[in-house]
Length: 127
Image 1 (cartoon, one colour):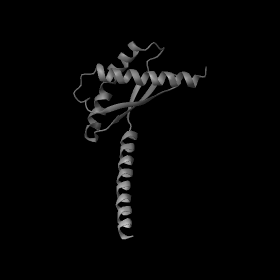
Image 2: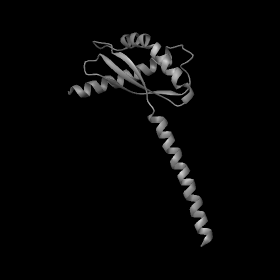
Image 3: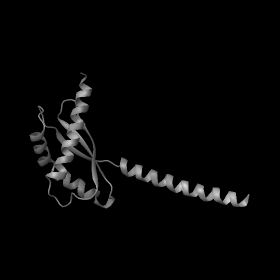
Image 4: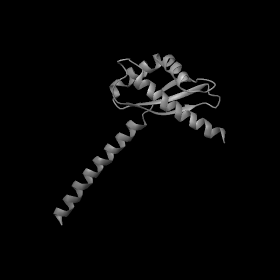
């Protein structure tokens, strides 16, 4: 088995477990609203893991990211209890704006489709 496949599996497991820990075990009121742990990237030596978090409500993004950064020791300890790996990676939380960007693109496409429908309707009336 390739080491890349192993790291990918561990990364996905870290993503799932961190998401579960945040949703089930953290009682911080700043961690609320619609958010998603989109992916995790664990280094080859298992020392560090970048955790990408997407927050749909822009006004809550900063407070949620601060809450996660302040709780990273607790999350790491809980992750170490849940996973059986040699090292529990140091967690680095990163704001992921891909979902927000996708929603923006979908809105732009929907608006463009409406404009196109209006133009098609106007052309048909003129004919």
